Length: 166
Image 1 (cartoon, one colour):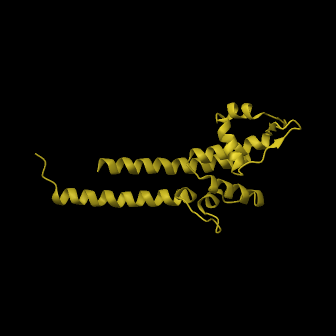
Image 2 (tube, one colour):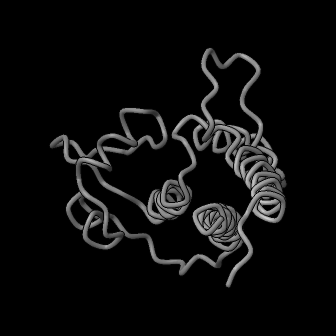
Image 3 (tube, one colour):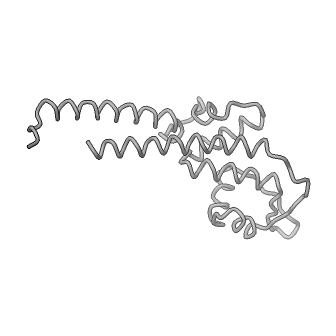
């Protein structure tokens, strides 16, 4: 019973994290630009956002971000790139899949008034593989419901078959 309660608490925490990430994305998208055009190198961005340079490379290779380059081949990150990286970081920290994030970013580029929650929770129709993290909130809600049912069944079994306490 205790493990089931702990599991339910953990799932609720994951749902809260997923919802918080969506709110973070909305705040980042509606945040005011400081007006300054900044150009940062990968190492500077990595340090500023507290993510590894390998993570930045991975996100770029997976199409989440296209970074401009200088003539010498060095990547330069603009304020818009950093804003997008903050969105990706927030969603990854909440366990959204790269596929779900990429799909949402693509849809967002076409429709700035997009329902972010729905976009993240609805895999693309042409997706060959749909992972649990591509329907994160739906999957977590289902897991919570199943665990609550399990908890009720365990409590009934304890009442029915448990020894009376002395």
